Length: 422
Figure 1 (cartoon, rainbow, N blue to C red):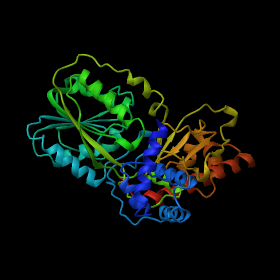
Figure 2: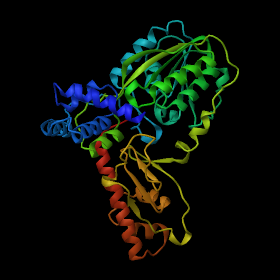
Figure 3: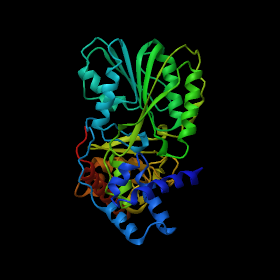
Figure 4: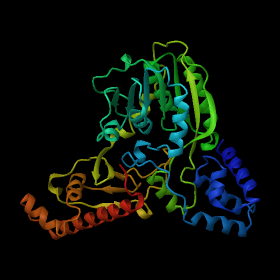
């Protein structure tokens, strides 16, 4: 199956390069095929003698050239993080979806957005009717924390298993429209539809985004499995429109592409398929066991911040005799985790993960937090001695200084890379 997928990409690349060696246009032409998959195809074709050396050099050179295209991100939310599977719609993607949603909104008394904070904020600010608007989102508290909307706007913060908190009970929501943007994996779609099964009225509509055919080799099977599942829940067959909803490329993915020498691509190259379905009857139970797949995802990560930089971390026990010992180890060249795919088998030792996709192993997470609080201190060793009434060894001071330097250089790099986010 994987070979069939690679062969399809190779055929598409070969057809394109008959007329052009522009990597930017190649990515745009092969809609939602990941630029790294395209790069891999170019290497395969060259090694198999199907691309000339001249073509190969021109495409490779084009890929390295820095694109001049303007970023299409709406930077009104905190910077996205890979651990949260946090891809955001582009400005054009938001416009397209708003136009589509508006065709159904006139008679809607309740609209629910699941994992779609940008759309939720748009409608909270722009909807003039008395429609009740809900956001169900893993990071709802972070996304909406600094804004106050009307009494008709509600947020439900939840963990990745969708164990819901707060005073709002899902079964009391009777949604006319549900808009969903799950991570692009089948088990998430099933779990999101479990929520729809609880909250959506009969004759209510579900609108969402699904990965296009060439995103990976299993999409056709996943689409069929999802269609079968939603019918069991009482929804009509999913109706799709292809390649219509753009996403901006998040900073964590830009860094992955950069370390692969890919700098020349449309910023909104990732394009989703739109789907819609209508509820025809009520199903009293949820049928999937998909919640088990979430237990090893976000729930193992906590989060702290360095300015606007989001840092995920995993806590681990510290020996009481080693409370001021610290070492931060590099795990990859340039410290960048080299993938955005959940299928990638990365280092198991990662316990620091930044929104720029930098990953490290740190021997002392509590001390890392203290260092972050004094990241620009000129003599952090002396400062810690005074704060905690201790005498540090030269070896401990050296480790603390090295950790401070690593974290400070990370801070400078990421602030420069992704700029000012909400």
